[in-house]
Length: 473
Figure (cartoon, rainbow, N blue to C red):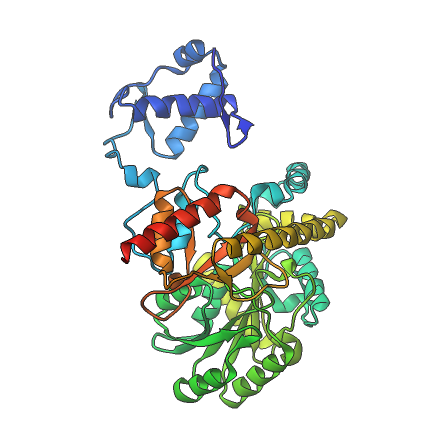
């Protein structure tokens, strides 16, 4: 009889178990390329499942190209066999520490890796019960909810909710000024396509979210950085770059800054807007971490009314990374052109994700969920700050909320060295090198306080610092 082992904390379905049994025989070279698989009837009898279960399993393997069907003959293992690669199933220890290093290591590493350098919350902190309830409701609704493309602007009820949530942060936008996208990164990609040509200058904070660098380089922009202060970018440097380089836009992180945890102050925001207006520079505000703020910080869009500010965001951080949905909010005369770009490059945005997110936001439980998240993050922040200081690191500032702490290593250590050593010890750290435009050694690490609970994180950190220090002697 077939016994289904647990996977990802749940029990396999029978079809999944059949699929995994066949994959194991192929990976173990017990079934070579071209080998004939048992008949549906024969495998069902051998594994103690129904024929329909085997048909479903074979259909899945056919869809992924693992097996092929030959009319009148049966099912065969597809070939050739891929070479066994340890690098493909483990962390890439020799990969250069570039802007995508942290993302790659965090996404491809196994569940046994600790990831205090990643940018998401623990699975147990997410509203999974509400997600399951929403999925069950969607399964009972009209078929077009699950099968049809969405409207060009995106699911209208969700856009209405997003407009209301912007109002709560002091930003006025109608639902028709909001376009749904497949993620915040997709939203920013569309904004880049809309605003810049290769060779155009773009201004960012230094440090800033590493994927900003990668995306802007993909669009062949010239990137300039203004040093961060606890209340926003250094205004004097900001002004010099606008004067000298005439950047097309300034890419800012609204609310809680990534990676430093800083918060834009209202005085600095006013100065940035005046400078942007003087030099005809646009501003793009990233709102991804908005719901983690204990109270709303200054938004440049609240002063500007979307005259020269565009906002992008998503709900990935607080609901689910598996349901991809982002948005763009912009002035009305830009909406049609942005829709055209969206349709040309990605078609419709995900209706299933939008409907599910609408359900989550509509329930009173979502606000309670956010309150609980903020409380958990506050507790985790205090604990992480104490542990960092005990390990000899100096926080750049104490953030007023959110998930990130930006901390300086002692003794002139390079964060890239710590990250490489940590990876060998089963811990993914986020070195400051990937967040900064400046080349060379960087003494900072970004810590996600929600993922710093296990003591092994700080044991590995201290071991890595000791090894790096010995290497410099």
